[in-house]
Image 1 (spheres, rainbow, N blue to C red):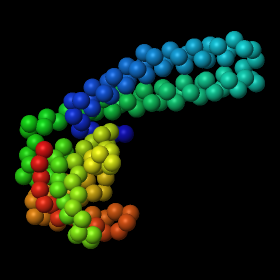
Image 2: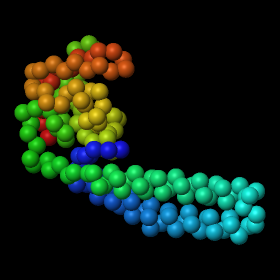
Image 3: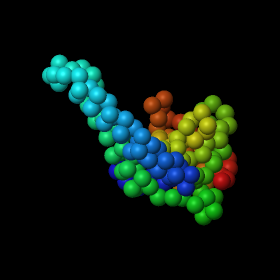
Length: 157
């Protein structure tokens, strides 16, 4: 993943805690599993050793990805958010003009996105389509389901 990722201070702290867990607990456990498998004899026919090495590789990839995310993370302060237009961390009340249903979404980073909690990623088709819109404007979003039209009814924090 490249580019800057905007997150809240809480999300950055969660990412750092997860990284410490991976490095401090899971990495030594993976090393122990490899050592135990190595002690069981011939490495050419040792499926347990192969599985332990593969698990270690996946763990190292996860650690590297998380380190990259933390390195490119920028904290967004909620007190400085401009609610005159849709930006990251704003809550947007919308009317889907196709179905006439009202929904409220919070625009968040990819790491924080959770549709069930009403949080959509700033990089999602809807998130991208809403950025910069003001109250009363209509956002036309091309999604896998076709062209969607959302009217911005309100913007808040």
